[in-house]
Length: 479
Image (tube, rainbow, N blue to C red; front, side, top):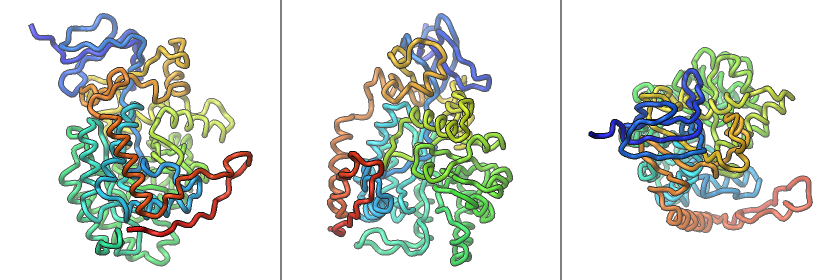
């Protein structure tokens, strides 16, 4: 007689993140095809394949709601000089980067996510000073091809750059208009927006404009905003923005950009008008506790949660000073807000875990499919090795996950019912090949862009309380 299930996964503890937030001991998960078919405790039923993981902690695949494609190959460049960092991003992303660059960077980011239990991520196709590679579909195609080969899920955010237009992408390319960038976005959506089955989704992104921008460019910004909202309404995809601060959320709402299918990153030092706009539109907030913007201002996460607004976590990775380890970002978020309020009860452990599982799924419009371990949902599962010295003794799993675990504790990763990481061994991604290709592409783009010298660490890192910018000036493009 055939076994009733394709796969049974057994573990010591299961943190379900279901509506009752059940934590089950001596538990098992049954998988059929790409979905969770049953959950239980005690003796598991029969299955074609059994993965027995005593001492392990099962939790839903982690979700990183805000990161950047490209950044993984420019880690640390500029060594803390923010202006230089943005210039490097612009010179590389809009000039030196070829499709091979975007493929190599995506593969590296996907490997890091896999090893850290991040099964779904939103990744902006570029960044820095609003440089999104939508002059042609080539960069997006390369990024999506890498995602599909990895077995993980990535929602690629694409959109137009900031005014003025037309925009220049490399000295040998014709300038690109707003309308041309929007057409490329629509093309990418038509071919790659299927995150639940093929692993690649597409979201739309639009630069954050401020009231000061409106003083000089209001007609153009309103026209572009209407075009963006029209494309989102026609496609039904997620809308996101990168870098909100005081009064810009209220402006985005006034421009007609916000809805329940919008998720906004950073969002520091918000005004009452921003809170009102979020309440009226139902837009979600992506908190980036490890980002530089969270040094310059504070995202009022506890206050937003109290106001009934969905808040999730994003890494803002992979550079200049942070990676994709969502365990670190959970711990950072808790300490960040506890220090602000001088209250150790702020942002409890369970809420921190919700912010990169079920709350993140809700913010991305995927709550019915991922974000918790429940019958009928996609089988996206992570197993942590609880038998590590820093995760022992085996009590209080939420405390162990959010305060003490790190990416290196991830033992097994399953996405869509498919085992992608088995006992810390990637089954689809070839780490040595990924690392070699990433190193070669990084070396190439820094040389071509004239920024090779920006990859040296500052001498003032030793013995000083503060690092000064080095006054480095690039030698100019060699393209």
